[in-house]
Length: 102
Image (cartoon, rainbow, N blue to C red; front, top):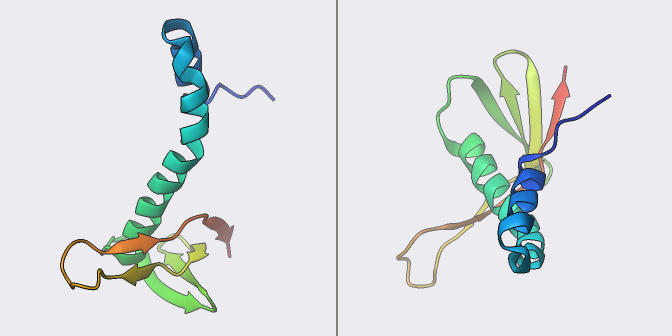
């Protein structure tokens, strides 16, 4: 089965053509950038009131989201730590979700 190139591969190819010296840095930073995006996405799914999420159920050290169409998403329980001063934004960590049906 043919799969189209990923967005990352396309960007890397363009970068290689235009600024080849930046390719190693792009490749090195990509996993962290991906993790940051997935963390923010999971945090939003875990906490925001979204109409397609029927309920959120803690599951051991994780969280299961029950979707309106019957599917479930499982991922780590987002943790929140506040700075010692109590001011400033919260820091959340969570990532790597799995999708299951049934």
